[in-house]
Length: 457
Ligand code: ADP
Ligand code: MG
Image (tube, rainbow, N blue to C red; front, side):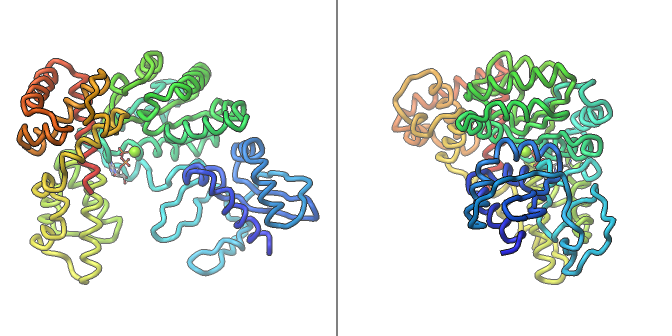
């Protein structure tokens, strides 16, 4: 085996124990730079990765190396360096430019989005983010952060429904600032939690702290998943304070505003709200048209305006769906070697558009999604328990089934564990009333709706 093969095999082993994002974050662009006797030098793309590999992955790397190379390894060094150009293939040919600059984007293969060394997807940029009424404030806040990181809006908290561009904006900040610093960390709150739990378990709590508290820019995606995770919240609270005190920029996203995150500590809510809180909403028709036009051009197509209008009018919920619809049309075009008519677009998209929406979702789906939202199980929702934390989700499930599917009260009662139809009716009325007075409840219901719109497909 040569160095390359050994390293690939080591990565194969390491990957088993890690989430995909995590793996890519720490191991992308690493390689064995030299392997002599029992000394190995591993090339890594940044100081930051170097530290993390030395501290956190030392044992696993060493043991995998020994196993795969079939010998004892006495020393492992990590060194910031980049692969020699001749090993990088472009379009099947060799890239010979020996002066290939370090800053150059990783080589892209056709469709695979390229994740850079900060775990950022390099396709999420400001230049391909379309600004409209629903996201202009969020966009402006992000630009302000870029111009003045750590100073103007710290933290910046972006919230909104699924598929509306939160991750895009968050990563665009990272991509933009990566020209100025390499101490950037992008992670999801789930990943943060997993890393933290893992670090504590393996006695690396301190390394974890050092890594997260040593950054210039911390980007945390989907922070709502910290709800209910006390240990993680505690750790994040301290990370947050430390970064904030030293004017390091923090940006977070969430599917709902800070106050609506269930089971989150008040001190975190107040931290989240202490900078700038902005939302992204559903795009209006003009924005949807602009997005469709731009994305079609990016793919090398241009479609009749009529077609784009049909898509913009019929895809209601989010931009991810809009992209999905466009991809289908492009696929049709490629397959038939001709642009589709409006009539065929209607057919192609028949499973995505509004008319078909209510057909594809069942009361069970709604119960499941409500349960997921509140971090409980469907079984608990349909159970007999009167525990307060189950009663409200149960009533909300009733409300949403009635609202969305127009299901009869007896059927709803039945779906909810064999309850009486009057109970279902009562629950519906109760939520319907409270919703008008209680903004938080209203928000929660909207967030849940977003969840099931996005889960239909
Ligand atoms: P969220 O994180 O809010 O669920 P994403 O950021 O993942 O949503 O966005 C979903 C998809 O829609 C991504 O491919 C993203 O690039 C695209 N997208 C979202 N908003 C815009 C926008 N304003 N302009 C262009 N593309 C967008
Ligand atoms: Mg996202």
